[in-house]
Length: 238
Image (cartoon, rainbow, N blue to C red; front, side):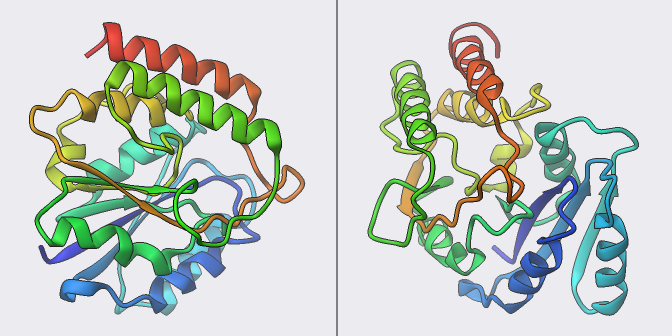
């Protein structure tokens, strides 16, 4: 294991993108791993691209892959592009906002580097790390979706919808992703659960959630799509 690829989907994140990129530069990874930033701009209409290109120019020593969609396709499509372009041995998803702290990467890396895990989920509902108190019904919805996913996948995870999903590269690259929006979360979980002898772990992480006024994008329609995806990818589709 030599490199961690950090997949960053970007859509109108001009307020936070530089903050998260600078945080990613700060972190020191265990195991002597190098970092690769894989940014996928999903046709942002704000200053996100300008800020990213300036950042790339100012940090020539940093390994960065930058891709841009010519039309907005959704988070799932951006992640799929990033997964395929990444060259690291291990991949992790990092949203461009500030809801998740990349200084906790090493917590997720340890089970993989120690040889126990192929996939590690960072759970917002485990441990004693800081968690911002926000929407009651979002929590109920997340718990319900995870519960429903567990029923059909026969897993016992606590946070299926988490952004922090870390994979051995060959695992995630072997999956054909079809969902273009937030349905990618239950789709990935259903498909990795079907892989023979897959080793999935969970670790507790912090969560610094955003309100809709602060830029949160997921909505109730995505919740209904998630239910559909849980049923589709666990019971019907490969």
